[in-house]
Length: 245
Image 1 (cartoon, rainbow, N blue to C red):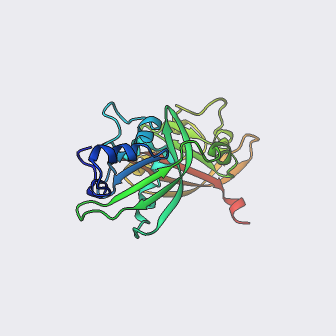
Image 2: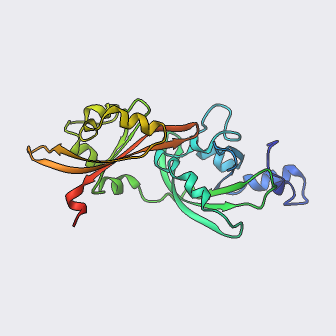
Image 3: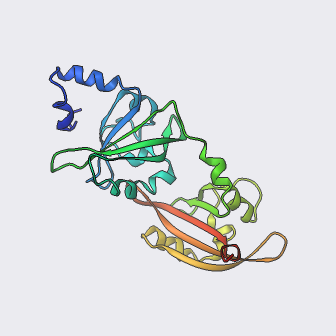
């Protein structure tokens, strides 16, 4: 813990080892990250964090990127959430999906900007690992819009029920190329390539439905931000006629 922030070292007059023991005794998962660095490195993690979160690599949590411990959807919004913290006296509670022992679980997470030195901008994230939020999977499946998350090779790594229904294929979409599915195959490959370069694209398309009718859809393609930059593509599509009412 050589990089632990000074505020924790000075928080108690007790010996350093006792302060560490008190911190590790907190039952909630606690992480402190430095948001001045683009990859949001973890500078401090308590025992609960080390037990509950899946390490991004064998080195453990400290110095690892926060993105490595978040689900894809939360990783795509965490930068904007961090940016909304501007007062050390005010905490923000945000539902975030965390990777734990191979699974992704949603927890109400408190984010608090800490009073730290000028060369650091530290945010503390805290959640109770024994009180997960409701499973977001069924909620996402009930969305009236199609949602797909693609990797850098444009293969599906997540799709909700609406996306599966609109895809034109049977079985799981995971691992399939979006360039072979509806409505994503209607857009040229260059649209997705540009998303990997950070661009957002909106386009209305006419897509065939299973019963042979035509559907007018608005397709929204945007980059999926991660620890090393853009790591994939998010595709949303919805019925333009429904949105007009």
